Image (cartoon, rainbow, N blue to C red):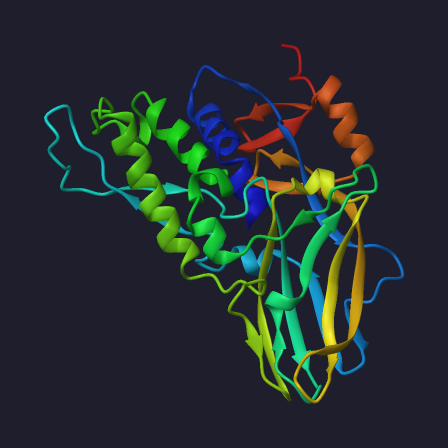
Length: 302
């Protein structure tokens, strides 16, 4: 799950602390995961003049899919430009610092529904400029600037000192490293079906499903709305648009708070009040060798 990935480093530290004989205490760590859901009273499925759109925020089930949780097989080279035989693997979620949604559009009109005729945007109430959803071909032409995971992978590799990249000499040229990362991310994006695209067409009586990505962080998208504008619901005898409809989906932000349970090495859900308190005074544990358990509080005095 996505939240488990976010605390991978924390869990590693926890495992280390539990195995070091001299370390008898542990201070838990906290994290907050921001998720986007539809605002209260907003139906995920809306129908207007023969067009039905179902919009759902991406869920943990989506993040288990390879396209959202991909393995990037990155080849590194040493200072002599020899490619390492063993491919190194990086894991970063595809929608990192983006807002993604799952969309299904059903066309019950008598004409072909062409997505190029409409606009899919995020409207920020504090801005006069709507933010357009990603079009697949456009982002493929500029993968590095469209998907923040490219920079994350670059930083992870370029700044690595040992660890999972200990067998790599990271003195390869910057452009070589960037090219390798862009190539791999582009190969993953190729596998994703974008609902918003110049060539996306839905035949009468048919439906299409796919994902939509907005270049907006989840914590910044909650106050606005997603809008499908100028969806052509009727055409004249010549096939020209005669009627257009609009779909609006207001969203809201939900914060999920977690802390590490040292006895299970897992994240456990907590209330936001406990999360806020933990940031100031984190919960501490001591190791009971007799019970072989972490006990909350201070160790008993001898």
